[in-house]
Image 1 (tube, helix red, strand yellow):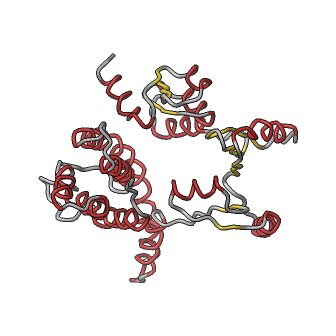
Image 2: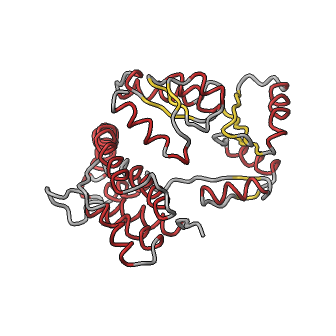
Image 3: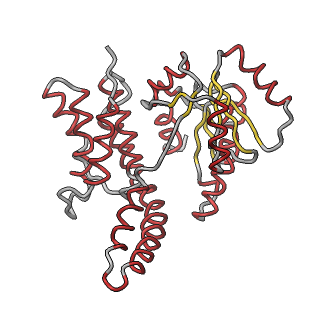
Length: 316
């Protein structure tokens, strides 16, 4: 039976890292023990044998240190890798996991230190100190609340009903949607002056082309659409895509796009592949994306990202 991490275990892992990444901190180990704490609930859920648990935890005794908030990305990736290893994935071993951790430490620290430590924290502290004039506790309360909003912000997923596609998505992302009436939720958004980030239509693969033509026939100029899989159509504001997001990030961080490597597998990823210095198509990508990519790697089930990185790092 395939092993899957529960939402409870993932949540506990996140809390352990977010609030305990400096556990037993020292100049020798830095965030290593914090990482061990974050992986413990995952390992305990994935393995029954105590020897297997000890072997898995031993992987994370290697030195680790990065910007803590963005470091959650690394913890999340290794959670997925550990789940794959527990299910017998041959391409995932201790060397693979620690190679990825070591490779991401520096880049994430560079981005996180600039954005979080160098920008966000000073701004929040400046506001909080101003509110603390005369010994008021409001500044401290403000900082604690706003800082935690970075970790816990409102995210909602609305659906018009539960069908096969929705059930599959629930299983993948481990998040329950709210079933709503379209007219009612539209009225609420209009009253509140709010709007969704995007709309997603799920249908059988043979219905997707016809649905896309129907949307295009409406002649709406302020929206765009693309498929993120064979059964999905995503509708979003015109001019907003992954390629433009990459350009904006590069502008803000002063990074040349030639220094960026991007991976993709479907139509929604094409602007990203085109904008990056090196665009890599997964082995399971659609033909249209593969044609625009600089390199085609293995599939996502064959550790395609790891294979591509090794290919470029080796200078092949």
